Amino acid sequence: MEFKRVVVTGLGALTPIGNTVSDYWNGLINGVSGAAFIKSFDTTHFKTKFACEVKGFDADGFLGRKDARKLDPFVQYALFSTEEAVKDAGLDFSKLDTSRIGVIWGSGIGGLKTFLDEVTNFAKGDGTPRFNPFFIPKMIADIAPGHISIKYGLRGPNFSTVSACASSNNSLIDSFNYIRLGKANMFISGGSEAIINEAGIGGFNAMHALSTRNDDPSTASRPFDLDRDGFVAGEGAGTIILEELEHAKARGAKIYAEMIGGGMSADAYHMTAPHPDGLGAALVMRMALEDANLTPADIDYVNVHGTSTPIGDPQEIKAIHDVFGDDIYRINISSTKSMTGHLLGAAGAVEAIASILALQNGIIPPTINHFTDDPSFDPKVNFTFNAAQKRDINIVQSNGFGFGGHNASVIFKKYQA
Image (tube, rainbow, N blue to C red; front, top):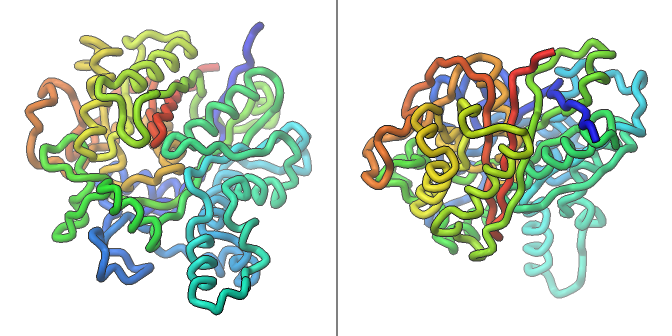
C-alpha cells in the first residue's frame, strides 16, 4: 500500500514564554526562562514555590465569562492555541468536507483544577453533595477535542490520547497514521495541560520529582547540568494542523514541514523511572527512524525529552548514543524544557512546534541554564548549551517519554514538492 504524504499547515501555541507561535519562537531562540514564583496559589507550605506559568492569558476576554466558567483551564488553553492554528492555516471549514476532518488531542491529566475545586468544596461542607453540574464534563481528558470539534463543526475521528508526558506526541502519531492511511484529510492535533495548582505541585513534590531551587527559579530547569535537581512544572497548549498533501495543495495552503514518521514503545520497567539502560527510549527512536525509512545519519537535530531530572537525562543520552553511534557527534541536541518547563501532556506538541520552526529557520534553540559539566556525559556531544546555533537542518526528531514507561518519537522533514 502506498501511504499518503502528511504535511504541517498550521501552528498555534500558548506557552510560559509566549502566547503566540512567534512570541514562543522568539523566547526560544533568545534563551528566555519561563520560570518564576507561582502566582496562582499560596505556596507558603510547599517545597517548590515556582513553576513555568502561562502569563497574561485572559480566559474571560477570549471566551466570555459565562463560557469560560464551563471549561477547565486545560480546555481553555486548547481552544486558544487551536484558534491561532486554524487562522494560521487559513482554514474555511464551510468550504471543506468536515466529515473527513478530525481532532486528536493529548492531555496527561486533564481537568485537575476542576477536580481539586469540586472535592475541596465538598470536603468543606456538611456532607451534602453540592457538585457543579459541569464537574464531570469539565474534568474528563477527552473533553478538549470534543469542544474543538463542536466549535468548528468537525465530524471526523475525535478522541484524546493519554500517555502522561508522551500524550501529545501520541496524538500527532495517531493523526499522522489516519491521514496517511486515507482515513481522513486533516486533523487538529496537539495537547494541553494545566496542573499548576495545589494538587499538581503538591503531588509532584510528594514524588520528589520537582526542582526545589527556590533561591533561583529562572535557572532551576537545567537539563544535563551536573546540579540538576528535578523538573520545573509548566502549563499551556500547542496545536498542529496535519493535512494530506494533495488536500493542502488543492486549497493553496502554506506548508511548514512534512511529517514522515513516528514511533511508540514501552519501557515495561517501572511506574515512574525510565529504564536504566534507556531500552525503551532507544527502541522508540529506532522505530520512528524505521517508520520514516531513515538511518541515524539522516537526522540533524533531536529535540530531546530532557526534563532536568537526575535519572531521566542520562538514560535518554545513553539511548541516543546507542541508536546514533558516532553520528551523535554530528547532530545538535537540545532541551527546550530548560525554557518552557515541562508541559507534561502538552510537551510533545509544544516541542514539535519548536522542532518545525527550527527546520524552517535553520536555528537550533538552546538548552539554557548550563553551568557545570556533568562528567558522565560525553563532552563531544553538542547539547547546544546556553545559546541558539545556526545550521542547515533537513530532518528533526522529537522525543517524549511519560510515567508508566510510555515513549513516543516523531520526525519532521523540510517539505519538498
